[in-house]
Image 1 (cartoon, helix red, strand yellow):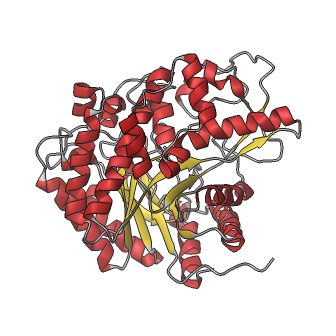
Image 2 (image 1 turned 90 degrees about the vertical axis):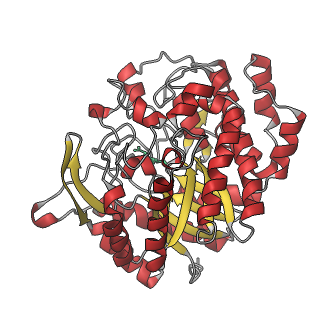
Length: 482
Ligand code: GCO
């Protein structure tokens, strides 16, 4: 097959999230977010790590942007910390918070790097959690709109690409099903209710953006995983379809079509855990059209009809840490813990190798994902995340030989190019991540960056930035655009 070339203006980028890189958690008027609070609860994160300092990007953004330009990045995706802009979530705007992002955006533009801004990467202001129960209240939608209006007004002249919510599927599952992210809840009814509120906030903000920044583009970023049946038994195929509806379409249909998939909705109603959807809600959801869809791709899942009841062998520790797979509804080989999961059973895929964290490595699944999503929704796609988490080793002479990351990226980018050749409309590709950063639950053991940061779970050494081998590989790749 002759591969189509990547267009000249293809956005080769890398990504990050505020809490994972910035540090300066209480500086210049920033208010606490739910992550500032949650990470201080003993036992919640690996080695008790938190984002108080992270990789100190707040003070080192100039150095980081210079490295991005050395690498030849065309785009940089980062998130704004809501509680820097409005410390209590809904009250007074903090000019120093705006200033930081204003400086960062100008610095990027100086080096011709396209900023891609995520509005919400999981860090709702703690004050809104305390006052309204966060995403469980419609009042939070108003607060979110005010914050978005503030940043659209401040940066809409320079930032063309905006992401509304990062991985709504992940932060709601981890936060309200598994209690392994804040707000530390394990209640599926509340999970579905919070999802509906976030969907409304997403729609409101897309409509607001189209009024305020008509020349810009906005869409959500979804943590997508293709679903495969374990055999050709039609019952297994059905199970994979069910998983697709519960894991993917439950969100994507709402984003792109303004409706919930009937299968899931009916099933949830039967169980008495469906969200309450008013006629006005339906109208709102239908009115908002994203300009593109952000896809974060790590891996998919393989499914089997659910006939065998497996004993739950997962320990609490495993649930809290790496074994809880944020991209799937249930840990592998465990029994359906809530009734709505009984329609599919997640099993091992015998054809795939795994990362050190047990995530399947599936580059072909990336092509499948892009094709499925594009065929179904016909929206341009921006790959907003893809990458490999590994335990990198700093060797003598400041060498980090992450050939495994290069292999991962190379095979995934090749499959993306095949998807492009198949006809998928692609805007760009942001590798996760630019520098090493705090893994929400895995501290600094799990690293994703092109740039090594010299620190560990116990704290900063000197936070020196050291380009890894993959840095030079991506730089050369971007130069050739192939
Ligand atoms: C981790 C996670 C994150 C996510 C990202 C999702 O190890 O904490 O993998 O880095 O990939 O935040 O958007």
